[in-house]
Amino acid sequence: QARLRESGGGSVQAGGSLRLSCAASGSMYSIYCMGWFRRAAGKEREAVALINTDSHGSTFYADSVKGRFTISRDDSENILYLQMDSLKPEDTAMYYCAANVGYRLCSLSTLARTDNTFWGIWGQGTQVTVSS
Image (cartoon, rainbow, N blue to C red; front, side, top):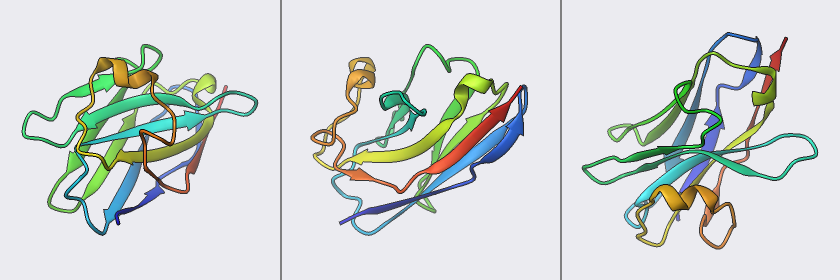
């Protein structure tokens, strides 16, 4: 079974940038879609960005991060990235990467899926704090 491990979180001032990484190990053959999620204090988990792992590599973004965040992957190293630019205090949260292990490609509607039934594997999270 695949395992995920995030890194790259930290503290930054508003307007700054951070790049998160999610290293995947183990069996990846059933993973067709991966994503980044976040949970701010007192709020529910929300999807931030998703990417399909097929040759098209389609990406999908939450409206709140569109134009500021970029999801990408390095298939040779099995690493998922989230480049975060123009960070705002409201981006402060614990960030997680996750994978669907059921041969499912993601679509725009998948941004509404934050449940563990769909996302079978989660990393441990990395904290991002943006100060004003």
